[in-house]
Amino acid sequence: MNIVLLGAPGAGKGTQASFIKKNFGLIHISTGDIFRENMRSGTELGLMAKKYMDEGRLVPDSVTCDLVRDRLAQDDVKKRGYMLDGFPRNMFQAQELDKFSKVDACIDIDVAVDCLMDRICGRRVCKNCGESYHISMLDGVTVCPGCGGELYQRDDDNPKTVESRLDTYFSQTAYLERYYGDQGKLRKIACGDLGPDEVYQKIKACLLELE
Image (cartoon, rainbow, N blue to C red; front, side, top):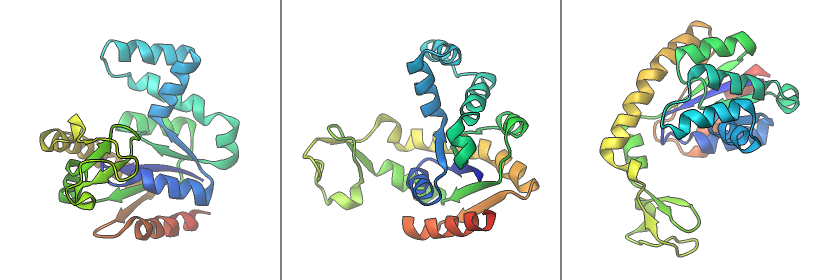
């Protein structure tokens, strides 16, 4: 089974990806991980991507697609199937993906914008262990409940930046939803006020239909 996982920043995509990987055995593939691994290994594609990143430029779609194509050709993916996270990001990437792999479904984790804003802007991260918490859980505490490290708000978690990130995401995703919807592959998971376990049960039901 091969799936694309969509979800705006703050939608809980990472949590759901962990559930899916554990219960369905799919290989979780993110473009960030692919970039880091290829740069660490010094591959030709990795060095090419690093050049753009070092210059402060976006890695071209063509290079990103080549990196993903190379990853999907590896044996573990062929045996177990994949879950793509962060790819495709636009129509060009989606169309290129269809040229070298068959996507069975696109799972779109749909969370209301006001909820996303609250989740991200209310996030506090520990400088020591990296654990994150929502301010509603802290009751005024300014140190990490786990290790006692200092908690801080990331620079890109302020309302203005978050709003811009969400606008960019939804402008791109609208085209992807239409693209996979036209193919009959879009599975939109309406989260509402559901907790992570309840959201996963909805996703699980969709994936079981594909097996």
